[in-house]
Amino acid sequence: MKLLGSNTSPYVRKARLVLLEKSIPHEYVVDPPTEPGSLVLKLNPLGRIPTLILDDGFCVFDSSVIADYVDSLSESQILIPREDSRARLRVKRWEALADGIMDSAIVVRVESLRPSEQQSPALLELHNTAITKALNYASELIGSPWCEGEAITLADLALVSALLYLDLRQAERDWRGSHKNLANWFERISARRSVVVSREG
Ligand SMILES: N[C@@H](CCC(=O)N[C@@H](CS)C(=O)NCC(=O)O)C(=O)O
Image 1: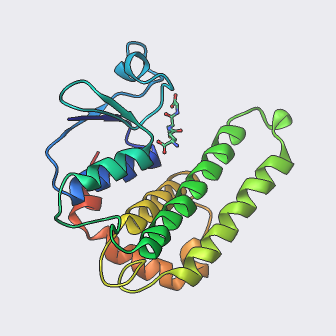
Image 2: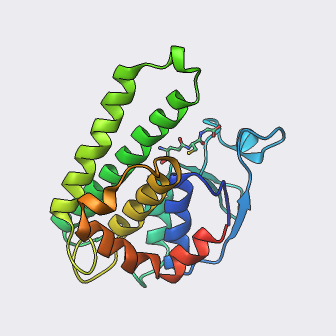
């Protein structure tokens, strides 16, 4: 299978981390949909990344759907709990929280690229506040050593993807200073091979 994406997209990082953690053989192809001739535009009606192309050509889109599918491919290292519905719900809620941080950070990024007189301070405030509140929530919720306790799950992979994107686009936001437990967890997950590989490009 082939994962089409870009190195800056947090949703792509989440999908890559799932593939890497599960040790699923795949090819990662940098193919941003903004580039003319991008395969993403031909195969994914939404024109978004990540896009996963299975060996028979079946096109999978949306990082949550990709994560779910890839996790189902093997019994080793289950990232989304299967038997315990509340445990599954907790992990999926973590994913939604992390995705929400990504969504808001992207709105802020896109808005910030507009000429300053055309920017909406209210929109920037709305999304920056959502990010702040989501980080507070994550900091209250996070377990040890991983988000949901002893086993690493999709929750951790989604959260690290969101935080790496904040570091990229909102370096001035001192989330480590206000959330020491998140900072410690981040140090721990940053040493993980999957995260190291995903940061190499
Ligand atoms: N909910 C989607 C969001 C995907 C998304 O918005 N990706 C952005 C990149 S970060 C994208 O492809 N935007 C279109 C573009 O870059 O042209 C997911 O989780 O996969």
